Image (cartoon, rainbow, N blue to C red; front, side, top):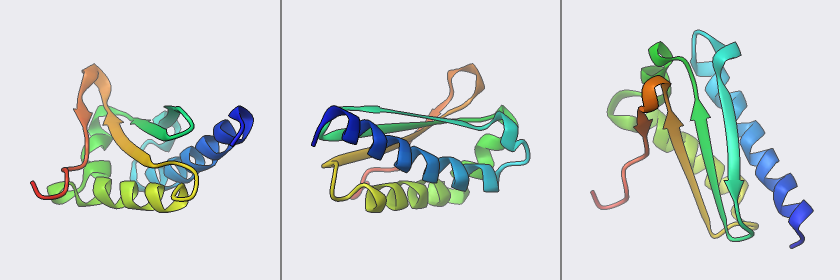
Length: 101
């Protein structure tokens, strides 16, 4: 896969995650998504207002985990590893639990 194809696919997955995240929060205009990575990996960071972090995380991190599952499914053919992280105001970071934990 070429560099431009990789970037295009990362942006498509990021757009999906942004659409989902904006539908969950009270301040969708403050919600942004950044996708970075290589041809094998894709890291998607969701940034939102501090008061919206809980809405994206969900009880027992179920919503954040569901977002990660959807992102992995959307990028299954292109990337071996897809990670989704929530970055809130003040540097708060939330990641889905690893399987088996």
